[in-house]
Image (cartoon, rainbow, N blue to C red):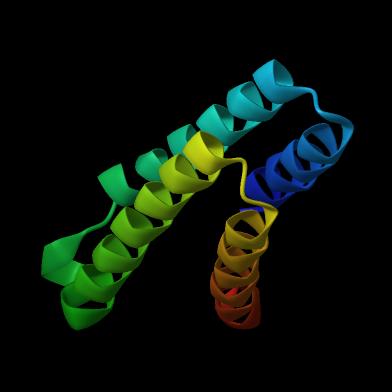
Length: 95
């Protein structure tokens, strides 16, 4: 999760500087991280939580694609906020 947050922060900076190819690459890496999290969801053990995370990961991937297409910093911040919330939940239950 931290890797996704770091890449989104860098993408935000690249967008502000007008470095659009770098922004696109960083958003792409973030999408790959989220897709990887989505791929390892265990629906049998995770039940409703896994289903909800699956939907949320899909939503974040769609929003990041939109942010990349439209160079929209607001969407990048929205997705960063969602990732921070998920991360704080995982951090709270980590041993």
